Length: 459
Image (tube, rainbow, N blue to C red):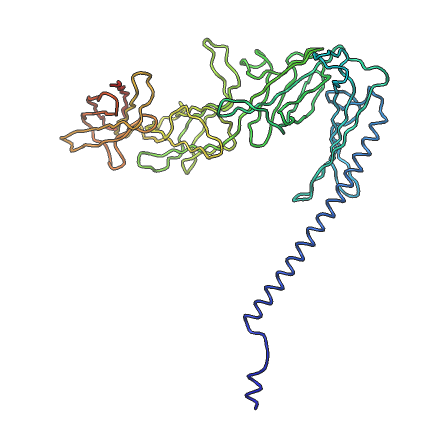
């Protein structure tokens, strides 16, 4: 009887306990997520209401200003309103940014339009942006705007003009399209102006009412994922003739400025020896990317934004992040006395590709090694000929090796399978499909890397 009662006692098995804990955990996690999400919405709504209150308060203060004082300190339209303020409302810190702009309303015509409006500074628009950022999802902003009309008839300052800035993206297909969301910082030290604006959906910023100033408006264009572009004063203030010169505003006219920008990519330079081992402390020079301008030499030389002398690290590499697209030339620097380049996986100059890590590998050899380097070129234009077959042969030394030229048209001996190249005279044969065969001799010298160039003519 006791045995029977024992066998029929009920209880939790191990599997039942695990299932119960899983269900309990699922309920707790779900409740926590719902609670957290709800709390986040409540906090965000509270911060948004606070931001709206701050924005309305700032706008009411601005409404009480005289029309001539409606402008920002250091802004395009000079006035008494700070461009940026930090405000605390209900223990929350807010950033307040104010922009003041003129509007050329098409109702009565526009500057240089049809009909033409002689008094084109019709009224002012104030835009107030109040933002907060507490990290994670607790961030946001509100924006309000209001129109301010002059007391009486509108009039134009005879020293004012219009600046239209267009930011264009250089596309691979050769087209240029406007880019939205670029930050453009405009500065004029002579006039005490320093203000930021954002490009619209067409990549344009039009600023009405800027004071006349010849080549004194300095522009700095920036956006994540794109290179930063600066304008420069004209020569000789800048030591070369800049492509993008500081902007000019002439009174009573619309002044157009177009700046072409490029996307950015990552670049990795790797140095290896002919056996494939990484080589550190290789001094190289890398020049290219955006052309900033030209020198006053005859003929003029390009001045590039990227111009660096660098050295490979302990792992034989050097990496660059967010480099502007364009053509780059890579070679050893004049300070490099130990190594010579004996191969490259890309023809220099090369172009960076967007969206990938561009890995440029240079093969180097010690200048004191017994070796031979041949550059195979097309006779028609001296361009590198890749995949040409280069045979080096010395019967008495029992040496017969064939190497295909790389993308840069180079072939190096000894090959990966050789321990070294012995001194002596070798027969060389170079073949390539569609080209006449070249034959000759070359003499390898003990303890010296020798090189030569050979051109092949098309059949």
